[in-house]
Image 1 (cartoon, rainbow over the protein chains, first blue to last red):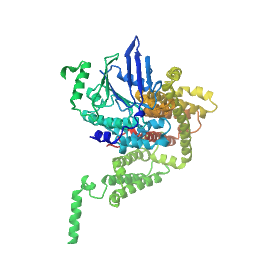
Image 2: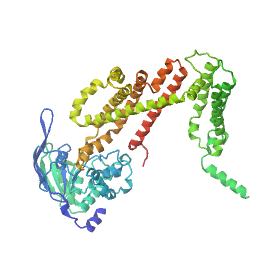
Image 3: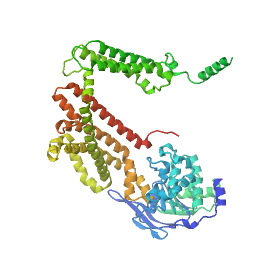
Length: 267
Length: 342
């Protein structure tokens, strides 16, 4: 309902604000005691500016590692990861990672947690108003003074989103951000996430193992194999927003995706 | 008619709210019974001490008796008038049973020392002898307390600061850990007092030597606990800060240290305990000032009353400092406590 009004009222805001992400022949391995453990194998794809791409695959397959490479927290053993054509070597506030756990700093209030990025870049004094705006975006404006332990799981994850959004990211990396929430909160927050994306038009990369979530949110779903993760399929979700969860086309795609994962027996 | 109406209205109001406190605890309304008893016991102890003659000539028996009686009179006054005059007695009420038992203890002490002399002198002194010390020797006792506090402040302060800095360094930089770890393992467990002879020899004054020993005693637990605090920080906190644009300095000051603070306070608490022990020993053996020195001096002159008086001051000082540390901790770590619930 909310998404509906928004997509009508707000014109496609500067689609150029998103990053063009190119992942080219990326392979990655962890060095364990005896032998290297390959986690990614020859992964290549491109996310256009402002595109919402879901990375779907069995848990533990290496999707999260891919996000860490894109965030610049680690360097790929092989291949290239480029943001707008420039190789990613270090983390940068234009590419923000949101984890499965909210990982808020418990010693900081909600407001101070959201202010973290501005503070780290030394622009907090000048840009403090952005903190309140980001909290309003996720509907928690009145909780700026609360401590994280006073929040429910859904609220904490909203704060984590606000902490990311306050930096006006051009690429939002979502590592199963709704994975630990109860199913009702999850449905609400999927809609909220979509609304935030439609408003800001950042490029979004969502790691998930929830097929419905991938189909409800993303424009494209990239399906990965078991570890070492290889791209099995790149599926376009040709259903316009706002989407309805009961859409027969989505059901069809779900069957297709589950088939790719070898789980289509019950659907 | 009007009066009746007012009365019923008032009656209803009372019935509607909770029954008054005095009724709930089954006493006559408007009187604090435990306080009444406590006041009576203090007065009785005062009367006994003042009216029954001492077995020997003890000064300040009269002042001791007057002091007890004054406390008793104040308690009686509060017990009788406090509830009606709306003087808040919450804290006093809580301590009510103690206020009854303490004068009983003083009475017993007074009987077996001053009045009947059942315990051998000079090791056992009557309570009025302590009053005598506090009245006549307060200056020296006060200066000793100040000297102890000053020594403790320097030693503990340096130890705490160095300990936190060292703990952070070891937890953060591999090289610091490589060099500091074996040294800490070797020297750390050694009681700081074992260094006493060396320290008094190496340092220009016994005071600076004592500061060093105190810092050593404080520094070890603070270092270890800070280090373990830094080591146990959730690694995701660093990833978050890095993606948000935080540099090394930001990671240390805004992530590692605040996250390690609960551990640091455990270290500071342990360090405070060991520093008390070192303080007293150092003052007894080298420094010519402070409560430890006062204890030693009093014992040397067989002035046992002074010794007990100093012990009480020392206990108050140590317990006060621990309380202070806990207050600071509760303030700094307010985010940990269940202060507010939504």
